[in-house]
Length: 126
Image (cartoon, rainbow, N blue to C red; front, top):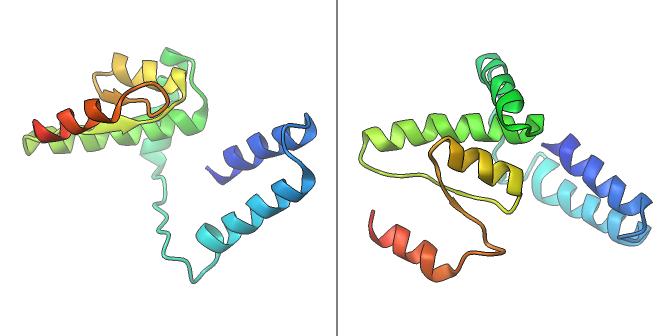
């Protein structure tokens, strides 16, 4: 995920969408909030099986590797939740990821286009 964030941020820096100052500020925030050993942020290692399983999703849905791993994880979690009569809602704004998740049967919420009322209604029905 870090490499995905870094490459996107560097792209934005190089094409002029953000300044060097803002890029360095974002890297500092990332370091303080996530990478710093004393951070409360918890990382979850990706098991080899998850990585291998996600390759098929990359091919099927034309999504990048990070999105495929995220989707694969979400599908596994959704299966566990459904066994307990609960439902997972994937929240994202990436259109390819959302299309792939919907195709795979997940409820999806896009905070850029969906209303908060829609999300509240989903939660209320659980």
